[in-house]
Length: 221
Image (cartoon, rainbow, N blue to C red; front, side):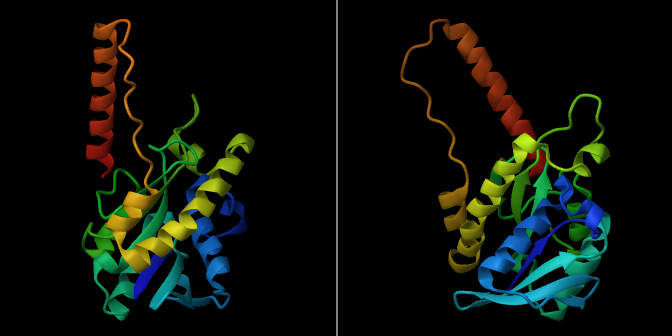
């Protein structure tokens, strides 16, 4: 059995905000799997479904984002599951809007919902389905950014990302994270075989990109 939890905030005023993109994915997955019976349990809404032969519990914590672990942790223990049996869908500011990334584990990376999950699960060894929402606009703080709806130009990107992730989540459950990451994580672009006109500038740019990528990976798992 697996738990698939989408992070977000309860209430209609938050329904279409960036912080609720994890909920959006779980709702779309429930529609795909025909899971229509939601019940209140352990400070959350849960619905049972199957992916192949595997039973899954779809979860939408009702605790508000910062206390998401108060829902997921007790559910994990009730069903006698391990952290590795938990899959969490959440928003990620360090990925451009509409981009996705699957990970087996990782740190909280400053995400308060993940901090709560790690505290209540007692481990960082649970899977992540990261959905990019991009960085705040100039003059915006993080709270304003995550609690605002997606701008019109990003709405189609998010729809496409969710559609793309539905079979990816099914692959995680049925074939494991390694297979799913290989199939669905974006591939890095291959370097051009064409010789650069200014090798020194190109090497400096590549080194800066590598450093930025490494720092982001270290910070956000």
